[in-house]
Image 1 (cartoon, each protein chain N blue to C red):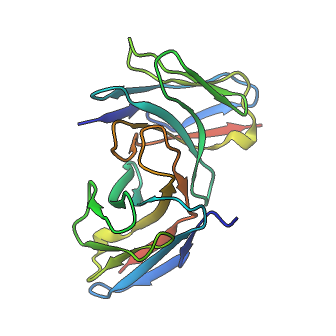
Image 2: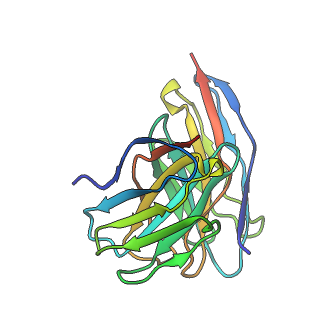
Length: 111
Length: 114
């Protein structure tokens, strides 16, 4: 079945550091790919998405490019802030099936 | 717009007790979902409802039942709670179940079963 693998955390960075969180997927067909973010004590919210190969999703300084050849959708940000501290989930949707989530990566940014 | 609302926010049960988690959305969405979140496990789908009048099992349905009461409301029932059901429960909704549709999440219910 479909699955998502993302790097295990926690990831701890200093403010203004570069962030990469790796995400790879296995899916039949042509999935859409998502990054969701969960701030402490809250539900998940969509950060960005891409619906076809080579699409780049971007939001709030975060970017991810849908790479079909490497089945990847890595999340990047050039300069993280303390307010980016959260748990980040990679997810995919294929056909008419509900989202399949990775296990999440906790990011802590220290001043 | 309130988005997706869940009640209660916190609940403590004893083993064997029953309870219903309530979820409502005001975005006129067709599809609704229940997930549980456990440390190190990500989110796992319990049940979903692709449209009003339909429900389907997800990855971890055992010990749960659901009711899609109307287009707005989707409840999750634990008939006989067990400690293994201690978790944070999230309800979500989406316009429909198309592949590109964004899911919108509620704030969660933190359930402890003693």
